[in-house]
Amino acid sequence: MSGLFYYSSRSGNTARLVAALDLPARRIPTGPDTAMPRPDAPFVLICPTFADGEGRGAVPKPVIRFLNDPMRRALIRGVIAGGNRNFGATYALAGRVIAEKCQIPWLYSFELAGTETDIARIRAGLTTFWREMTCPTAA
Image 1 (spheres, rainbow, N blue to C red):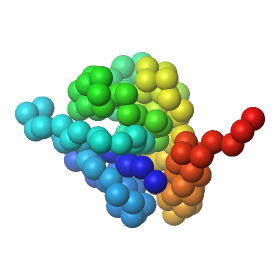
Image 2 (tube, one colour):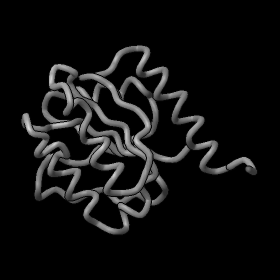
Image 3 (cartoon, one colour):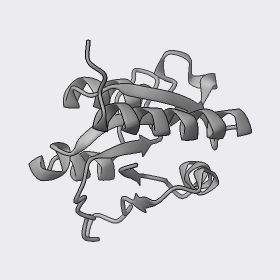
Protein backbone atom coordinates (compact mmCIF):
# COMPACT_ATOMS: atom_id res chain seq x y z
CA MET A 1 0.00 0.00 0.00
CA SER A 2 1.23 3.47 -0.77
CA GLY A 3 0.94 6.45 1.51
CA LEU A 4 -1.59 8.73 3.05
CA PHE A 5 -1.29 12.44 3.58
CA TYR A 6 -3.87 14.29 5.61
CA TYR A 7 -4.80 17.70 6.89
CA SER A 8 -6.49 18.15 10.25
CA SER A 9 -7.49 21.41 11.85
CA ARG A 10 -7.44 22.18 15.56
CA SER A 11 -10.70 20.25 15.99
CA GLY A 12 -8.67 17.10 15.37
CA ASN A 13 -11.52 15.22 13.67
CA THR A 14 -9.49 14.14 10.66
CA ALA A 15 -6.49 13.28 12.84
CA ARG A 16 -8.72 11.00 14.95
CA LEU A 17 -9.99 9.26 11.82
CA VAL A 18 -6.45 8.77 10.49
CA ALA A 19 -5.23 7.47 13.86
CA ALA A 20 -8.08 4.94 13.91
CA LEU A 21 -7.10 3.74 10.43
CA ASP A 22 -3.76 2.68 11.90
CA LEU A 23 -2.03 3.14 8.53
CA PRO A 24 1.16 5.06 7.78
CA ALA A 25 0.22 8.70 7.22
CA ARG A 26 1.92 12.08 7.15
CA ARG A 27 0.25 15.26 8.31
CA ILE A 28 0.12 18.47 6.29
CA PRO A 29 1.14 21.25 8.69
CA THR A 30 -1.31 23.98 9.64
CA GLY A 31 1.22 26.83 9.83
CA PRO A 32 2.11 28.80 6.70
CA ASP A 33 5.80 28.91 7.64
CA THR A 34 6.18 25.19 8.30
CA ALA A 35 7.92 23.15 5.61
CA MET A 36 5.58 20.91 3.65
CA PRO A 37 6.32 17.19 3.58
CA ARG A 38 7.47 15.73 0.27
CA PRO A 39 5.80 12.51 -0.88
CA ASP A 40 8.17 10.04 -2.48
CA ALA A 41 5.44 7.72 -3.77
CA PRO A 42 1.81 7.92 -4.90
CA PHE A 43 -0.58 8.86 -2.11
CA VAL A 44 -4.21 9.39 -1.17
CA LEU A 45 -5.14 12.67 0.50
CA ILE A 46 -7.58 12.83 3.42
CA CYS A 47 -9.02 16.29 3.88
CA PRO A 48 -11.82 17.98 5.83
CA THR A 49 -14.10 20.57 4.25
CA PHE A 50 -14.27 24.19 5.36
CA ALA A 51 -16.83 26.05 3.28
CA ASP A 52 -19.10 29.00 3.77
CA GLY A 53 -22.78 28.69 2.86
CA GLU A 54 -21.91 29.25 -0.80
CA GLY A 55 -19.15 26.64 -0.90
CA ARG A 56 -16.27 29.12 -0.94
CA GLY A 57 -13.15 28.07 0.93
CA ALA A 58 -14.01 24.36 0.89
CA VAL A 59 -10.38 23.26 0.57
CA PRO A 60 -8.25 24.37 3.53
CA LYS A 61 -5.46 26.81 2.60
CA PRO A 62 -2.64 24.48 3.77
CA VAL A 63 -4.00 21.77 1.45
CA ILE A 64 -4.03 24.23 -1.44
CA ARG A 65 -0.43 25.17 -0.63
CA PHE A 66 0.50 21.46 -0.47
CA LEU A 67 -1.13 20.70 -3.84
CA ASN A 68 0.16 23.83 -5.58
CA ASP A 69 3.54 22.11 -5.85
CA PRO A 70 3.56 20.21 -9.19
CA MET A 71 5.75 17.40 -7.81
CA ARG A 72 3.28 16.70 -4.99
CA ARG A 73 0.26 17.04 -7.23
CA ALA A 74 1.75 14.55 -9.71
CA LEU A 75 1.71 11.83 -7.03
CA ILE A 76 -1.86 12.24 -5.74
CA ARG A 77 -4.03 9.27 -6.74
CA GLY A 78 -7.26 9.81 -4.80
CA VAL A 79 -9.01 11.90 -2.17
CA ILE A 80 -11.13 11.11 0.87
CA ALA A 81 -13.07 14.04 2.29
CA GLY A 82 -14.65 14.83 5.60
CA GLY A 83 -17.43 17.20 6.46
CA ASN A 84 -20.57 17.80 8.44
CA ARG A 85 -23.91 16.71 6.98
CA ASN A 86 -25.56 19.70 8.68
CA PHE A 87 -24.07 21.83 5.89
CA GLY A 88 -26.10 20.11 3.16
CA ALA A 89 -24.74 20.62 -0.35
CA THR A 90 -21.30 21.61 0.94
CA TYR A 91 -20.87 18.34 2.90
CA ALA A 92 -17.41 16.96 2.01
CA LEU A 93 -17.18 19.49 -0.84
CA ALA A 94 -13.37 19.55 -0.59
CA GLY A 95 -13.34 16.02 -2.04
CA ARG A 96 -15.26 17.04 -5.13
CA VAL A 97 -13.12 20.17 -5.64
CA ILE A 98 -9.80 18.33 -5.27
CA ALA A 99 -10.94 15.40 -7.44
CA GLU A 100 -11.97 17.74 -10.26
CA LYS A 101 -8.89 19.96 -10.09
CA CYS A 102 -6.42 17.07 -9.84
CA GLN A 103 -8.31 14.67 -12.15
CA ILE A 104 -8.37 11.91 -9.53
CA PRO A 105 -11.14 9.81 -7.98
CA TRP A 106 -13.06 10.95 -4.93
CA LEU A 107 -12.90 7.70 -2.99
CA TYR A 108 -15.02 8.26 0.11
CA SER A 109 -16.60 10.83 2.39
CA PHE A 110 -17.04 10.74 6.15
CA GLU A 111 -18.72 12.91 8.74
CA LEU A 112 -16.65 14.64 11.45
CA ALA A 113 -14.22 11.98 12.82
CA GLY A 114 -15.94 9.09 11.06
CA THR A 115 -17.60 6.02 12.53
CA GLU A 116 -16.31 2.49 13.04
CA THR A 117 -18.06 1.60 9.78
CA ASP A 118 -16.23 4.45 8.00
CA ILE A 119 -12.89 3.26 9.38
CA ALA A 120 -13.50 -0.32 8.18
CA ARG A 121 -14.72 0.82 4.75
CA ILE A 122 -11.84 3.25 4.24
CA ARG A 123 -9.22 0.68 5.30
CA ALA A 124 -10.72 -2.02 3.04
CA GLY A 125 -11.27 0.44 0.21
CA LEU A 126 -7.67 1.66 0.34
CA THR A 127 -6.37 -1.91 0.25
CA THR A 128 -8.46 -2.61 -2.86
CA PHE A 129 -7.62 0.76 -4.44
CA TRP A 130 -3.84 0.31 -4.10
CA ARG A 131 -4.02 -3.31 -5.29
CA GLU A 132 -5.91 -2.20 -8.41
CA MET A 133 -3.48 0.70 -8.96
CA THR A 134 -0.46 -1.61 -8.86
CA CYS A 135 -1.96 -4.68 -10.55
CA PRO A 136 -4.75 -3.57 -12.87
CA THR A 137 -6.71 -6.39 -14.47
CA ALA A 138 -6.84 -6.71 -18.22
CA ALA A 139 -10.03 -5.38 -19.76
